Image (cartoon, rainbow, N blue to C red; front, side, top):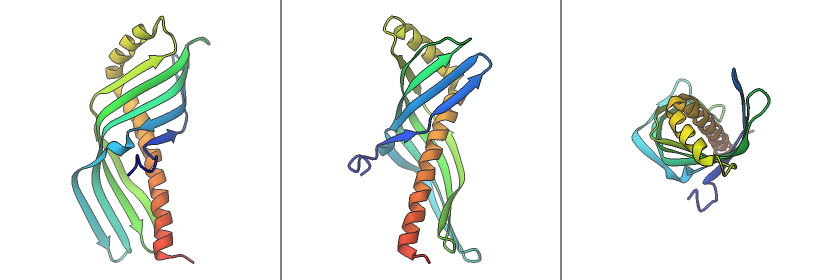
Length: 178
């Protein structure tokens, strides 16, 4: 359905990070593979009568998320720029949503990446050194896996925010508002 509705690719906000050694800026970020979404684990739905809230707890995963962006990195004012492409396989997360039926709002109560498999990153734009950069990046991916997971975490958080906004809109339409 996501592919049919042309929703498999999603833009993500730019990332601008400063480190002690320099600066990294990622722009024009696109995430694809959202259609590889699957449910893993249990699904639990709880209604709390006192607060008129539904709590939905579930585990989701992606077989393979791809991403691409433009990058610019600088160390002491100089540095390369080009394109990055990458993939994250077997990403799983735990989610909990609260749907307030009185306010007609949904919020993410809990979100946590519980598993991430192989991460691969390729740099493009410098034909003479791309092969060397790929070797370094693939070695460094293990070292920087936490940073990469944090970036993927930001991408998924943006996706969840969009999802919650859609749920809010649907609740407003179905249950009506003032």
